[in-house]
Image (cartoon, rainbow, N blue to C red; front, side):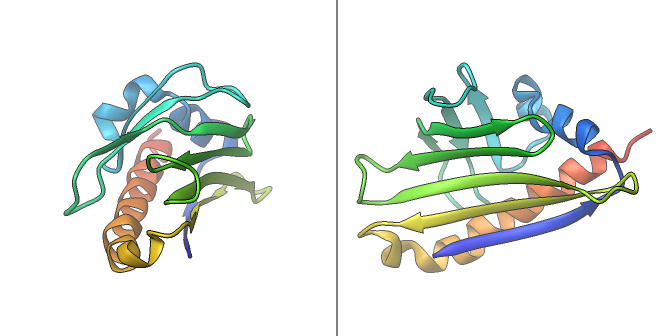
Length: 143
């Protein structure tokens, strides 16, 4: 199962990236991902706390799979252990070569418990992605 959202942001990838990777500021603006802590580098585990709309707050420790400046940030997280409920989350920035950025946020879910959470993921998690995308756009488009 995959959730994919995107939004056109009237700002350069470097400006969007600066906001996206300023993890200390997440509590001030991000309605979906409340915090990311730890040393964000490929291979490292970080701690992420998410709070989808109409859902409980969750804290997990995903492994960073990609962290490419102005382009991509991706991690893989598990609920309890691998194979039960795994989520690969990806933030992708596409440079449209005209001062705008297409921001794409996706998550691919695998595991035995995914069918049990499908409805919640399709509504609450997708809403959380869209809320975050909109807030990121608003911040990046400020002069």
